[in-house]
Length: 180
Image (cartoon, rainbow, N blue to C red; front, side, top):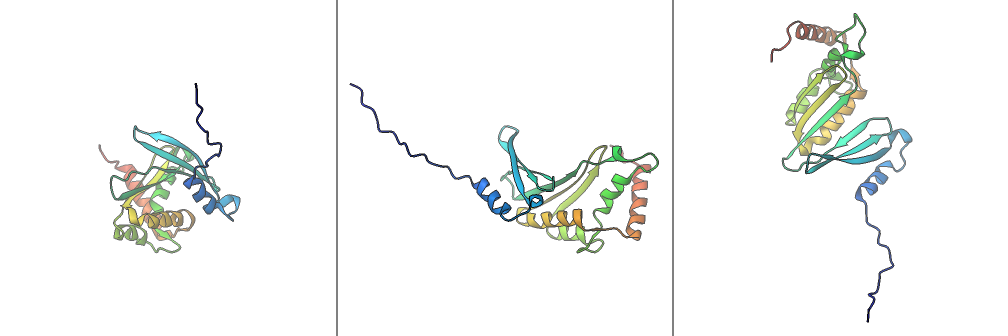
């Protein structure tokens, strides 16, 4: 004799915190201000990367590692020396330098100083087809980096004295490359 066990026909819906968070962030936003989760990808054997796309086309990659109380923030641009024209080389590298100077809210020199006072280390690099900026900062100050990077991308101020000075720095770096 076989006895059948009662089955639960009521479907339980699992809560998706990421979907809830994105729903709250996207609520009332225009299409250019929305965030979409595009997938989760493996990073090594124990970590993952979350890929998001902002409405303005910016890709955000997020990987959480709680083994240290620091955050590392990278901003990558798909532009480098291969995008330059003959006779107008070094512009990607020049802009890499200029992006550390002045914004509408931060006078010349205060961008780096603000990061350093928050305990951050920052640097940048330019190559053939990319330019990137990175900061390592105590995790409780990550919001400052996000704010400063957004400001750097949208409110950069270019003044003749800084442009002239950075042109000379870049020219010297090109004349005397570091030996490895």
